[in-house]
Each structure stands twice: as structure tokens, then as C-alpha cells.
Image 1: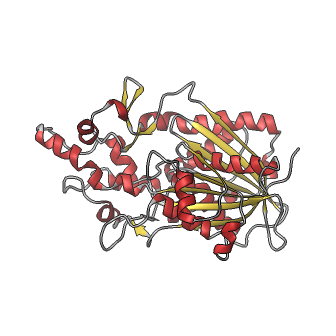
Image 2: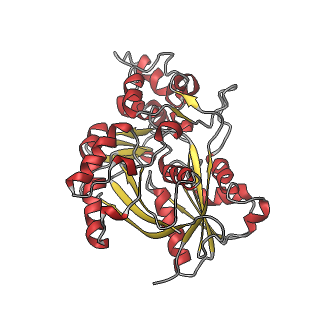
Length: 381
């Protein structure tokens, strides 16, 4: 069976001050000196009221690297820097690390200046945070680690800033394009994603004071065998297949904003909830013999309030209804921070004084990259 594994502490790092909806475009910049026509519609739909960006509000320059923001979240797990000597494994993940190489965990370790330890980096989109957590969970469970740190972080603003699209806009103007605006699949995500980092401290011992979260299981499934890529960066979609950035010249990469994050919104809307809720959870319910009455909290990561009712309906569709009074989310206040979202939600719930021993939490983390999904069960002890 292995050892029991506990989340002893959670920490969050959110850069700078909160940015409300009216300030977003000023902070991210105008593309071609024109306001986005899609912004207002997308914001009405996603229900996000404020978010955080690693952009200095005075200078407009990026003032946190992804690795530095992750390191800040990790430091928040410990009372002082002496605590950085207490863990033997660091697992770090991000959809968009600062560089292609070295891996993100190496850069976070370098920022922390903590003693030598095992480092692992997981990749992906929203799911890479939970796959990082699963690595640490299994490492502790197997007795290979006594204390592990997991951190997920996103600095989406670095790739959503207007400066990344200036070359494409100018190229369209130069070629006398009738509508030089950004394609919707790129513009859409500028108003959906935000920055943040969340970290968790795992060990094989429960806290002696207060509550602890025991990780009971983490299950994930990929449906890439059935569906094409939906959310991608560093590639273009050609006839349903991705053509990677290395096949384009530097000039082409700039003129087509190849490195930007894009989303096939039609594919997303048609499949995300059906696949990541129904197809995934019905497998786990059968495998784990789950029952809705066992859960006191449902912590779902969804990118937009647009999907809230759809997730609820999908739960009903598989006879696994979890009423809204059991749901916990902070999307409206903290924004959609991708892989870090599950940690940022759990940190707020963990420190809310609401949790009581014996309660159970079901977490849901979907990913539209090529359609993957994970669920996790936590018990409050």
C-alpha cells in the first residue's frame, strides 16, 4: 500500500496588484493601437472580475520571471530560508516556462539557492500542475522522499502582451490585409489567462497542529487518441495537425505569431466538458466506487464561468450530481492561472477555517491541450 501522503501547507504568489477588467488592455497593450473588439464579449462570458499580471504597472515591463514567481510561492511554504534545506525533492511545472532549456525545475531551484535535491519538471497545459503533484505524491508514498515541494506557475502575460503581435499586425498592414485584427483564437486567450503560482509541501506525516490534507488518489486520462490539438503554442494548425515552430523561419514565426498561445474555440466548446467530465469521471467512478454523498467540497478548475452550468449538467448526465453549495472556486478574484489554479484554489480553502476533520474534497482539473483530465480525492485529517 505504501505510506500515506499529506499536504502539510499550501502557498500562493500573485504578482503586483490586482488588475480589473477596465485596466486589462492598458496593462497588456493595444495591438495596432486599436482596442480589441472581442474583449468585452469574452469578459462578460468568463465572469473574471480581476486577475494578476507580472507586469510593472508603472513601467509596463515584465517584473517577474516565471521561475522567480514560482520560487516566491515555494518560499511561502516556510517560516524562513532555513526551511529550504528541509525538502529532498522539488517538482515544478508550467505551461510556458521562461525558456525551452534548461527545464523549469532547474531554473526554480537556481532561484531558491536551496541545497542539492532531486528535481523534476512536468510539461503540458493546465494538467501539468496535477501531474507534478502526482509525481511528488508517488515519490513520498514509495518511501523515496520524506518531504517534497510541488509548485505550478504561469506568467501568461509575457506571451499575451501586445509587443508579441506587433510584427504580425505590421505584416498584415503591409500586405494590405482588409482586416489586420488578431485572429480570434489568439485574441480570445488574451482575456482568459493570467499570472500566478501555487506551491504545496508534501510529507509522510500529518501536521501536529491544525488540519492536514491527505491525498487519497489522483487519476488522469488523455483522449489524444480521439481528438486533435485544441490549445497550442509554438505551432500552427494545418489540416488538423500541428506544424511546429522549428519548421518556420524566424521571419515567419514573427509574421504569424507562431509562439503565441492559440485555442480552437469551436473544438473546445464541442468537447471539453463531455470529455473531461463525463468520459473521465465515469471511468474513475467505476474504478474507485465513488459516491456523491461522500464529498463535502467540489473544487473544479474551469477557465470561464461559461462552463460552470455545463460542468454541472455533465455531472448530472453521469448520475454524479454535486450541488453548487459544495463547489469552491476563486476564478472571479484570482483569474485563470492554468496549471497553478488548483493550488491557488486549495490554498484559499485550506486557510479559510472552513475545513473540518473527516471531510472529503473532490478536485477536477481539465486540459484542452489535446483533451486530458484529472480528478483527485483529498481527505481532511
